[in-house]
Amino acid sequence: MEHRLYNLKKLNELAQGDKNFVRDMVVMFVENVTSSVNDIYSLKPVENWKKIGEIAHKLATNFAYLGADKLQTIAADIEKSILCDKNLDGVAEKTEAMCNDAILVIGQLKEKFEIINEI
Image 1 (tube, rainbow, N blue to C red):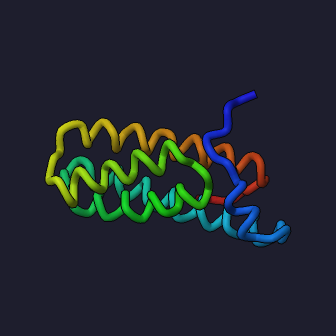
Image 2: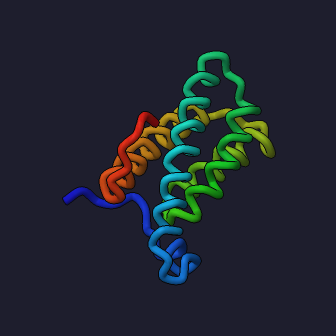
């Protein structure tokens, strides 16, 4: 069995037993993160780090709600490096690692919640 990269404990607490709410939030997460990862992939070749930092900020919040703590930490680190410290050392590698793990989380969630669409 594959190790889950997320933990829905916080989301389940927020949902107070409403399984439809949880599923709706997961679907929204999958859609938003898929779009954000695609945006990052299009921005990396032109080195638009400021926009990537803004996307990382948005992703950090998404990852926190899904209990993807490792990803939340990486996204927050990318944001801080780019937007606060203006330090780009290792940011490209961190961004690639974050996107790769985000794709894994998306796949795990799609499988668990049987999300079938053209995302």
